[in-house]
Image (cartoon, rainbow over all chains, first blue to last red):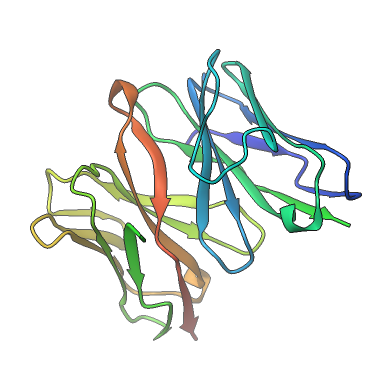
Length: 114
Length: 116
């Protein structure tokens, strides 16, 4: 399958700071990328969908000013958690797909806000 | 309202046995039904997926059975092995642009343990 790489795999930040997570498609052009959030021992929840060159579409209940998504190229999307607080601590996972194809997931980023 | 209901929450199967996980969905507009395997601290990995125009799909030891009228689909893992011990998620999505899938709605997951 296609390769999707997330960076960093783990990050610890202080409360009130912002942290950026990168999602890259390594061997295909990702016209669409998805960002999910997963709490411990829970399911994945779709946060937002982004198409290259367009504004992201956020799911109901997800604060767009809190979770900034940029999909400026066909191989890179970034999720920035702004003014992070301990309740934002979670496992963030991206997936990416080409037009008309299935999506592949990255390995996830464990965010801990202290 | 949970759109994809998964059961059981946890499952213990003896090595060599058949593991069966079930999912039910509510939105008849869903047209893509994948199953994912996830190990702790890792992203989910696609195992097998099906679309509503077929009732069964088999890939190696993994089989999806799909019942459109009942709005149910299940994963069967044949000859289950200890290495299959993981959390399994079913999911569903609406049609996406270009024929691909939209963002996924996941079930709550099944923690599968295969005993040696």
